[in-house]
Length: 397
Image (tube, rainbow, N blue to C red):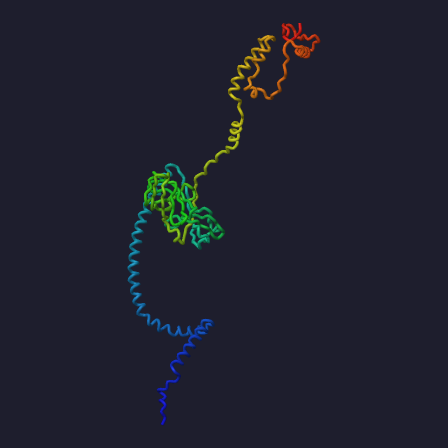
């Protein structure tokens, strides 16, 4: 008798052997697929065959989500429609007021015979990428010199000023954003008309309104627009809004912190403005180099001492009087009167000669000196009687 189990209940290999076999097979398939992509085709065929089943299983979920989206979309569209309608009415009113102001401005200019001063053209551009320097606030736009971009042109969006073109290439241009620490824009406060200059900050998240006196009327919430006095930015462009004013008693200027009106980093499409100011240029200042040199030369000329001139005037008068009236026997006294003082000698005599010994009157040396000066062998001077009737004191009788 056969006691083996029927074929229906034959177990074959043991459960452990089958587990080990399938684990090894799974590892082999994983390694081969990861290294050699052997199951890529099989996976694609299996996914294509199972896709209808997946879509059928996801139909309830898609229906529920579609109904929710339809309700949300309808509410959102209704809200946006009402908002746009209100904005349209507001813009229509502003456009009507702007038309009236423009007509009045044209009438007043024609009445005063004033010409239009400004013309502005706009070129659309799109930001391509940021610059590589992380410490600067700059972007690159896809317009260059071939499209009419100029260096220094202001860049704006629909909300306000974004920055300024600082470098121009044939097909691209570099724009320095408003929040850069080296960017400056002349602005004025709309409420009071106070003019100043706004700068970026090193962090690039705010703006700094500088040179505002501590007594100026500046409040949080004031709007800043371009003043247009620099000839680069058109007047009236929105720039920033004041968020904080710090006034300290020990400083002459207040610290005014502002935030840009336009999203400087969030804008994608921009407008590059070509602002042409028809105001005539400033007159040239004449060259003052020659006049400064003449003034410097006059300052360098040395004038004689006033005390020396005052002391020399009576001496010159005495010399003139003695030359016309005094006789020859009083010549030594005149010589003493005409001798310059020791303090005035350097100013009146160009060169200083060594002193010579003067012989005493009546001595042999004096007589020899008298004969040598007169040229007479007897020692008497050959002077006409009308000129000098008395003999000199040192001559022999």
